[in-house]
Length: 145
Image (tube, rainbow, N blue to C red; front, side):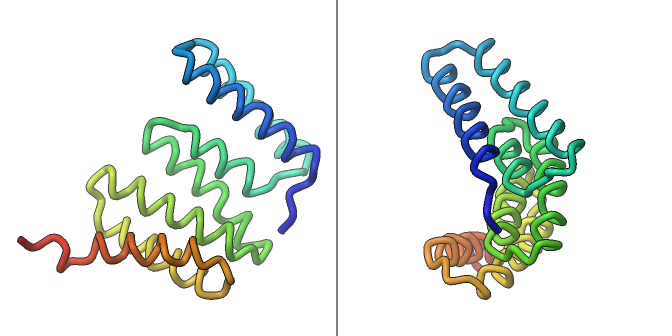
């Protein structure tokens, strides 16, 4: 699933702005950049140009796990409807990580297993390794002393 060049360029511009502001300690500027990215995502969705890349990226830049989960859940059906297994795998892995942060281990494992199923249909070996490592690190055996 290709990302339209204009969307990709604008998202990169906005995320670079957020990163630069965060690295320089300008929290207000980082927050303003995040808000602008959110508005951009919403405007494209309203214009019929929705794309999982938008919501996954916005979720990636969302500090709080619960709101991030909601954004990933907005991206996931877009990815699955488009048959974009790589996006779906990445989104499910991010959902697994966010649920793990919240100690929601059953949900984390469920999303990691979904990520693994999607990733198996891709040739993205680094993503497949990352998912496998998550599953190993979060297996019931890893929880025992």
